[in-house]
Picture 1 (cartoon, protein in one colour):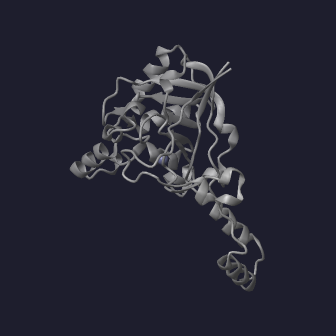
Picture 2 (picture 1 turned 180 degrees about the vertical axis):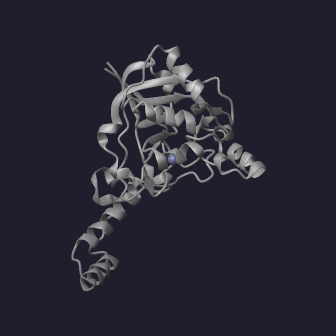
Picture 3 (picture 1 turned 45 degrees about the vertical axis):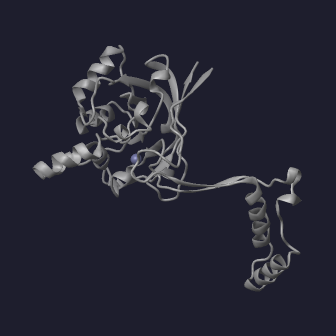
Length: 273
Ligand SMILES: [Zn+2]
């Protein structure tokens, strides 16, 4: 069995407008925090907290690195970010409050069965920055691999844009059209993944067309398909070219369950054999 990582890491730098802020707490600082945390677990009244804090200040109830094996506590990290940083699954709630006239599913309401299915990779690497992927191009890509999309397939749209993940070019990418998205949904697909910054084309390309025309159809059209037809998409995938065949593999993309959220991070993988 071979497992291919189809995910980008969460990291504190990069071309995104607001990259995650990651505070790294080393093993020495971690020892102090363990001591403080232990004090907070001791008693649950304000009086007991005040008493414990005075014991901490007096040094009687305090831990430092020297109290731990090898004079090292534990390392941990604090992250300030949004749910769309790194590789993640967008749930229907992200697209709008309702989907198919029912309350839209939040990330914790996505059936996990949707997230473990046969994968199909479609090659759209000829698409250029800011271009729309049309329904004809999706159909041609499916025909090109002699495959027939079946219900619940997890379809991976490969543009190759993950190679720009550390440059500004990453933000200026091709993306799915509403028609192409609807066609895949009509085949019974519930999850579509793409290796770009967003499922729709780059924000600037959409914004330019909207400003020129004032036509709302230019703004996130593939996302808004999710109000009429229930589906999810994975954004910021990576390494789709590392999957050795266009089908005949499984995809796993279970999202982190963030209460009432419209998206959750995934460690998406392809499994061969
Ligand atoms: Zn997203």
